[in-house]
Image 1 (spheres, rainbow, N blue to C red):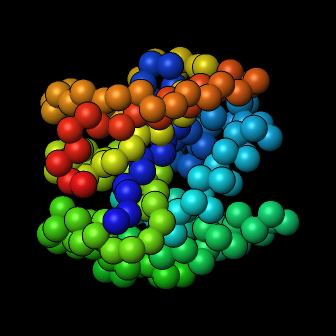
Image 2 (image 1 turned 90 degrees about the vertical axis):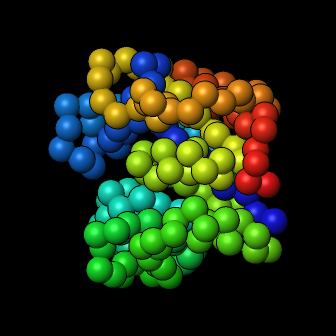
Length: 193
């Protein structure tokens, strides 16, 4: 059985919005000053431990605009481009980035079916609205909260007002020289597994 892993960059004040500056927002581009070889290695290992991406529409569109033209010597870009991408959207007519599959309805049921398949982890990047849906249906197996040492003062947050109360168990921590701290949590009572 596969696990759904939410891996998201956040600020110290909990903002997940626009870490790389792709969206036109006041809060954009805050993650770049903290990127390091350690962070790159972590994200590389995470990507290669997964065999699918699960993305909301906005994150998908930002990734699809950037990744197809990227190349690198490590194979990261090739892996991003070749992995199956499950895109949750009620508004997209089609998803054209390599190996993209639209999920337009019965989201919880469709993602539950993906989890039942054999394979590696399914990674969720960004995708704030999708994360809310996954939390509501107890479909998240692990949260990897990648905390950056910056306060931006506003923006979309991963844990928003109205989010269901849930106890999480701390499974792992990592600290990078750039000040990034990775907090890995697993739901105490994951009913989806």
